[in-house]
Image (tube, rainbow, N blue to C red; front, side, top):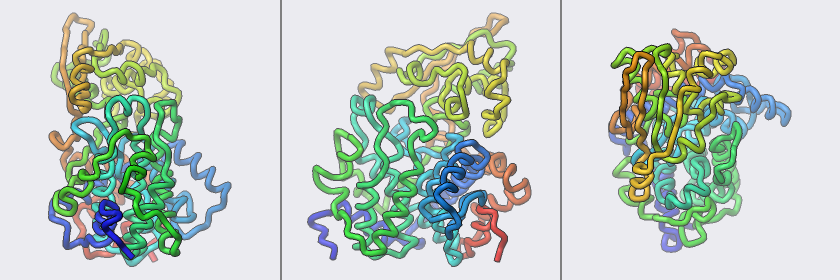
Length: 468
């Protein structure tokens, strides 16, 4: 029985997760949820062709498959939890997935864990409608975003330990609670079980292919839902008190009012950022500046003598991989991604083919990129941690000197990607798996089909199943 005086924040979130209906979603929220589904499903289909997906399927095959749920692309069938893990890693595999940003500082990749879990559970539920998927997406995203904001640490703590993945467990838990039709008490338990068993935060050590460990939160949220549905005893105050979730993820401050203020009225998930490049979001302002120089001044790759970047300290200390070993290294390599932009390579999987990773023209161009820390940027960050701007100076072989400062990457809510841009991105990612016609039809269905229509045809297309 719920006693909200002991756990007001947890109860408020559980009530929102449990009670929100499609009728409660304003039109802009429905549209935002469609965009998020489109982008995450596209990223998942793009991720299917990566070594991350292949190795994860190989590993889970060793544990035994043949469960009721099916992954995006159809390569693995297993439990909903294991499929959620694979889906989430696939969505994040190209580092092309959405972000929610505090100003310009990413604090979450909601789509990977939330939509990864949603697609896993939806693959076993043929009676769902598109409206059910949209509602679960909106509720899952909103839950993740609000908790992420509330546990955001100080800049000093963030420089030492932080992670985008751990709090995403609440998005997958919200999805699980909804699709399992948990009552309010069980929803509280689901959130509690998810929160105490999520992945650990990063300590800025090399994380390998796990990156922000978005897969484990997706799996954990689904398992928490099933445990709660089975009546498993669970924590009931995961978002309340001094020993609540924020301490689990090593944050040094907690602002629970940021979770509940305007909950169900103001929808923060309409303020998502989408990526035009498959690379860490911190790199995007630099890449935008180079695109502007390349296209505006007609600078060809062969004309580039040097590229000098002055920005925040992480660009210099964490992103200088001149010869990345694999696609994940490349996603976090400022020189490598700059070279891709200057060469005009179409953003997407083409950036990370084996041939491209070992291309000498790419390596030669990347070697012309240098990065330094700008003291003015760092001074501003002490006042505003979201200030992540960079100045890019390009010198050409014919003596031209072009310079541009960028603080915000294209795709940020103040400079959003259009629906048309998102559909082009989806087409590039989905066509190698589905073919051009099926990819186009799937995008049209996600963005335009009536919300009362069955989601089964959409799930059949995503998982590669034959319609029944």
